[in-house]
Length: 112
Image 1 (cartoon, one colour):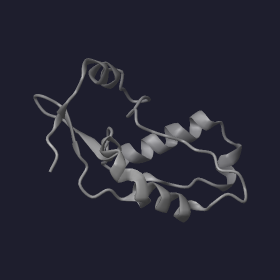
Image 2 (cartoon, one colour):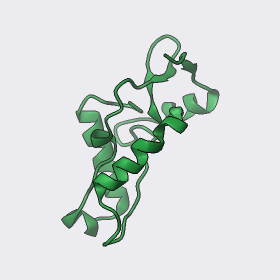
Image 3 (tube, rainbow, N blue to C red):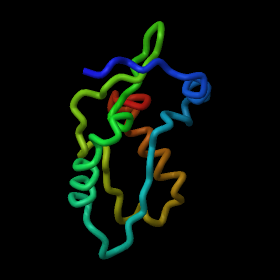
Image 4 (cartoon, rainbow, N blue to C red):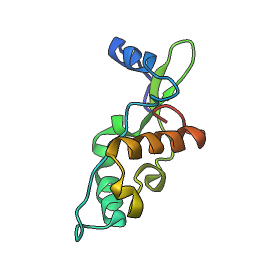
């Protein structure tokens, strides 16, 4: 198992910004046009390549000395989600805020 990676000052500064409306800082959003590969193909592509960038499969471990640690089971179905339908008419910022709230409510919390 990989050793914990202590937070750098920049990491701490970003985490210090967190509050009720700012949760996490590792959300990536990709808009996919009609006719593009579906969610399963996107997950398969990410799953096949995630090992080449282990930093993307880490989570924040709180404690006296917070650090980035391997996330353990990396469930692409939880991490790569699809939003379709009425949400397409909403501003992108609204969709991102809702995704962050869902993540927090699920107990996965910050960068987890």
